[in-house]
Length: 374
Image (tube, rainbow, N blue to C red; front, side):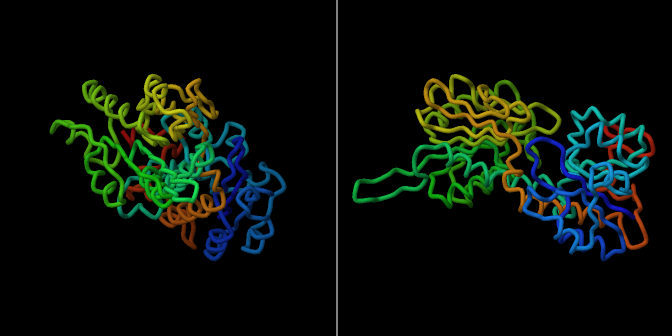
C-alpha cells in the first residue's frame, strides 16, 4: 500500500499526520510512504528525517495525494484536496463530521473516510484517542497563553519589596483539557477552582488539589450527566449554573473555558455582564472559540480587551502551538488505529470491529455518518 502524508493546507495549522517514528514502522510493514515536501517543517521535522525513515518526498500536494491508497491528515480535506485523491482511497483524519460539507463529495469519490473524533471513549481505544492527546496539549497551552496576557505573577512570591498574591484560576469544564489546565496552573503556583456539570469529576478535581465549584443538582440532572461527555441541561439548571459561575468568575484572575458538546454549538458559560464585572487585568482563555465560544464576548480567532480591562483570548487550534509534540502524539494515535486494518498483507476494513465501524463516515459510495452513528 502507498500511504500519503500531505502538508496541511489550513492557515495556521502546523501539525503533520506522521513523524519519522511512525513512517519507519509503516515502512517496516512493507508499505510505501510519500510525504509532501515541507509537510513537517512547522513541526520541526525536516524532509531529510522522513527520507532517513524510509519515505519518499513528493514535490507537490497533487503528487503526494494522487499516489495515496491511504491518506493521513490532521484537518478535514478540502474540495481541492479531495479532487486530487485516488478514487476508492482511504482517508483518515479529524473530519468535523457534524458540520462537514464535503461528505457527499467523499462518497462520490468512493473514499473510505474515517473521522477520528468519532472514536468511542473506551479502554481499548485509549491509545488511538486523538481528542484526548490533542486536548491534553491544548489544556497545557491554554495556561501558558493566559500567562502571556496576565499582567501579574502566577505563584505567590515573598520578596524584600513585599508579597505577591497567587493568581486565582477558574477552569470551566473538566475534561482532558480542563484536567491538564488544572495540573499546569497548580504547578505554576496558582490557586485553582474548577466547574463541570458532571458530578463524577469532583473527585478528579479535588485529587489534583483544586476546589470543585458545584451547582446543586436534582437526581435527574445527575443521571443525565454521568457519562464521558457533558449534555445539554435544563433552563433551570442553566440559571443556577450562571449565578454560581458569575460569582466565581468575578473573583478570578484567569478563567479558562473548555466546555464543548459534540455536534452542537459550545454552551455559553460567561455572560457579557459577568465579563464586565471581572477585575481589570483578568484574562479569559476561551478554548471553545472555534465552536462559537463559551463566553458571550469572545471574538473567534482574535484577542480583544474590554473597556474594563479584561482580555478575551479566542485563539484557535491550541495544539498547533505545540506542533512538534502534538504531531508526535497524533501520529502515534493514527498508527495504532491503522493497526486495526493494516498488516503486511494489505488493508482490510473490518466493519465488525466497533472502532472501525464507529469512525467510518463514507464507504462504497455512501455517506454512513448519521446512519451507523445515529
